[in-house]
Image (tube, rainbow, N blue to C red; front, side):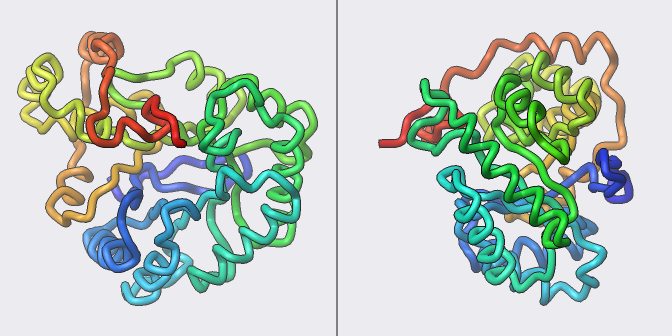
Length: 287
């Protein structure tokens, strides 16, 4: 699984499997990077909002692997909606991680988190933010640029005026919550879809129907969920700091049948993401 990649629209190759680092602090993130790289991971995903870029950088430079062999993603804070704010944030991320370039830079959200999915769509502001992304790309500060949590009309807004098309849209996509129309729209426009929280932030693990299918293949529910997203053509970035889980998440050498894929696409949607339900991506609202 570690050797499998997708080719972005600009020719850059991105590993199909990555390590998510949301909710890990600097110390945990540094160790997670070291553990993941020693196991075989080459794709690490972070964000300015995670506040662990310093730890990610320490992990990168203490893992005995050449920087060029790693694929590092970070995300511009959702609140950065001006050209200058985005440029400053890119330079800050590079400095915190100690990097000369970022492999993939993403706008974390089309709206500030406190206004996520509300009436103000920030269309003009996102065009300005995208211009800053394009300029950073042209200067070699980033190797690829993309979006996160952007809906179809958010993407259309960028496509209408951009010089460089988005290469990625990173979205919530997992068994019991698969935005198939959005995925198909992205793929039609040559935008690779990445799935964050591909194991539903753990809330799908006790689903009896999903467990029954996992048992059929002799795999865990987590492995089934990752394979499901991969068969939809998505990059997956499961978050874990547990080396055993990292190894299991990479052991995906099986194929889900078409019939079982259809069943998984239609699993009853999760209504409650537990203690993390307050996060906007899980339907909550920040105050």
